[in-house]
Length: 178
Image (cartoon, rainbow, N blue to C red; front, side, top):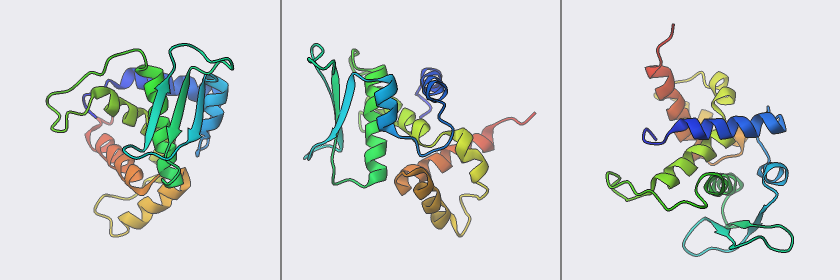
């Protein structure tokens, strides 16, 4: 995620956490939407080619809805939470912008997609909550079990928690401690 500018993401996360006084995960995405983004609705819809989708309407509907986030109900609860948070990031940062493509990315994944992943990870597993809970290393024999326990605690999929623990490991390793 080195190419993602963390400042806009961090400021938006700070706004969400401070305005709702969210201090203890797991955070309810439905509560965040209801309080800060009432114009966005959420619901389950069987998907064929994707896990989630953000639909933005040309104008507000009669009830004020301007966008709808749909997710595949066949996904695990943790995966659904991640993908809904991912789509929320698209609403916050990208809904009126054209995708920014990164030709250096082998999969040609737009920068907006990586920013949405970065936002979803930071929203569901904030570093200030995770930092004191990770007292093990990547080569720890109980790594998988400990990651699975943290994933259950934050209600995210194991692979999302692995990515957050790895991010934290890199932060700790390369941070200059004064």
